[in-house]
Amino acid sequence: QVQLQESGPGLVKPSETLSLTCTVSGGSISSSYWSWIRQPPGKGLEWIGYIYYSGSTNYNPSLKSRLTISIDTSKNQLSLKLTSVTAADTAVYYCGRAAGINYYDSGNYYRADYFDYWGQGTLVTVSS
Amino acid sequence: AIQMTQSPSSLSASVGDRVTIICRASQGIRSDLGWYQQKPGKAPKLLIYAVSTLQSGVPSRFSGSGSGTDFTLTISSLQPEDFATYYCLQDYDYPWTFGQGTRVEIK
Image 1 (tube, chains in turn red, green):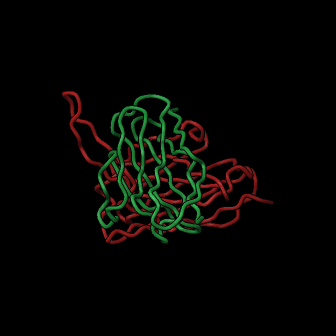
Image 2: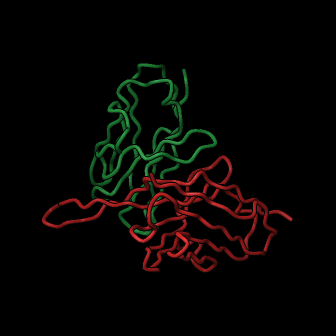
Image 3: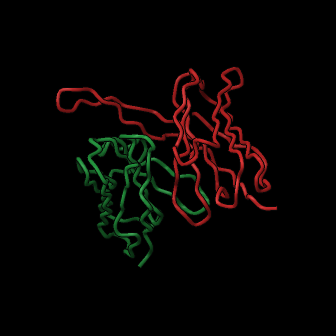
């Protein structure tokens, strides 16, 4: 059973850098895509970005200029760094595993991805 | 970015009711759509992926359908543990985007 656990400071000052780590247990990080997702208090979900175990990444353009997602396969961890934070970055931050399935449609094969494992989430508040 | 619009934003229903939630994409997304259930203070839970494939362990009263731009999540007989917020998610194109959520409340 794969388990994910987010960790990091619960309070960050405006203009500083938000840093979180997600530790994966019960399975290898070297086999899937891994994502960060966030949810401001009382609001909906926002996909932040993903990283493949090889290190390739894809970021949400709304955060790309401030965002770095990295992976340490030796520790089975992924990390998130978000610079120059403001109150708008206050949210519960989740890490999740993105599994995929191939399907056939109109003569071609495609991949559908989905988050089958999630961490419990960690609340990060941006405030002075 | 592809916009995902859910309707209704909230609904009230009774135990045993049939409930349908709609998710509409701003462009065609093939079968790259999943549904998640979230209860207060908890992480979202995967219910359905690739439009209609039920995640292991999810009760069969949940089903998904649709294609192109219009998708539905149906709960055939609402149970007490189903009162929650439901989100759709498209993974057809980056950035992946969620619907705004549908809150299912007790009538």
